[in-house]
Image 1 (cartoon, rainbow, N blue to C red):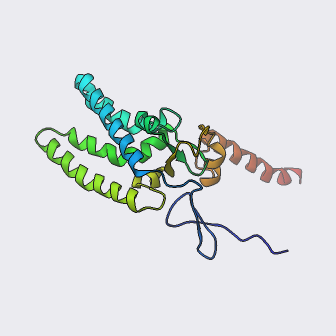
Image 2: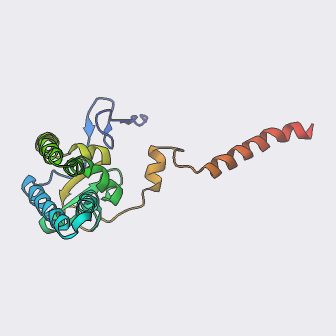
Length: 210
């Protein structure tokens, strides 16, 4: 019986796997319609603009928070994504995106809003420049990438998919996945100290018995 082939992490994309012959095993979900994604984004931007107008002096901050957290509000769907039937999935856990995932994947687009919050007239110029550069790069990636990944999707390990493909998917617990990906990083200081104390006591027992 042949031994199982080792699987290595892909240096190109987190969340994907590469077998020794270089064959990439990517997302199990097909690429979502670009038109549905565009429609969903237009709706979300319209909602953010409405919040900006309604909330007065705090409008910029409220709109920024909405854009960052939108994809984690309705089980991986923003208002626009719910209307157009697309959903953001966290690939390592095959579950709907959370607010953390939404913040990571929308950070490049939120930067455009931050640039627009600079004092006038610099804010308007910076916002337009950011829209052209950041928006252009992100749009190009969505069109050319086989999975429709933006730069933010690379950071968050997410993918926008057709909602009918993942109907019923909900937010799953991430603790086992996180621990496997980043061993020991999220251990509390108390647990680390407790572990060291136990190890010291075990090393000291043979000496005490002599």
